[in-house]
Length: 401
Image 1: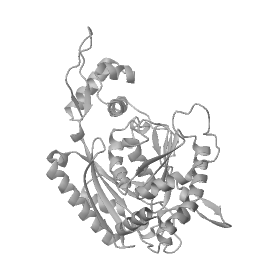
Image 2: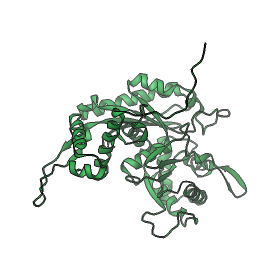
Image 3: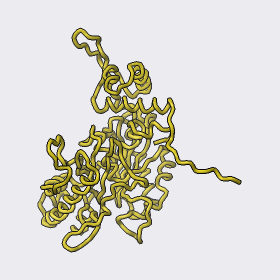
Image 4: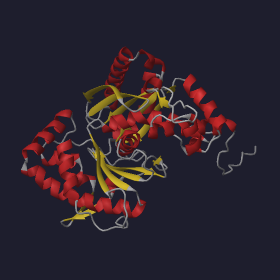
């Protein structure tokens, strides 16, 4: 029996694919600029006025956009601006870290609508998944109680956890979360919630949040250096999130750095995990984050010593990603306590010379983005909305995003 030959080709498109893409383009234009009229949208997107009118009517029928008061300007025809409806769509996001989980609900604009947090049993994904499902149901119930329409407008459940994904950890490596990696997490959560489930690493989740409502909003080329229990880089390239062939793009925490004669992965020396170990906490519970924040405010010598070494390595990391990706800016983002993040950000300067140091820059090379223990969960929740509504190349194809 002859086997079918594998033929390499890109997926084609059709009228439905084009329409889906144009619909996403309209949504993004309003999200980036605020309320826009049909004429404004036609000029900005280069679509015909009739196409824009058809798309607006469709989006209005779906409850995703709504008209505002008519605007009259001089002798011209009055125009009606359209805005996005916050209650048009919702999504849930889950952050899974070594010993804690955060669950958050966001609306169509990426704004938080409900949240909950709990500690996880270390290294036990079976019981941990039960904890997560209980927390998801709590947040879901809180959301529906506040906004009843949300029960029928959930676009999905986004999961964010440390990578890299798909590797075989050597032994019980605490950096890899090997037991969680081997556990059928997406299938378990999809079955328990009845929602479509997507997965990102925590750095990409932070980049998702920054792109939707943070310092990367409106930018097309950004590297988000993620500082959390580990370290990673979320990549926004050409206006889209880039995750790589196995969702492991940006795992710079695995890059070997030399300092003081020792060669170790970056995240073993400049992550929150390395700081927890130096403080004798060696954990990732909510209590550990609170302890770090308190000690930072007190100027604990162990914190100051860690800051000096971590800044040295991150200065080199900024130089590396600038050289490789040529971004408009590099953001320091993540789940570190704000006082620690501010001190670390300041200590990274002065930056090393790189190809990003050029005259006429309109945006700073290195900026402090969102630093919030909830940043990863918010990015995870924004991912289902991004997949459903952002204009990405895959939306034109006959394949799902």
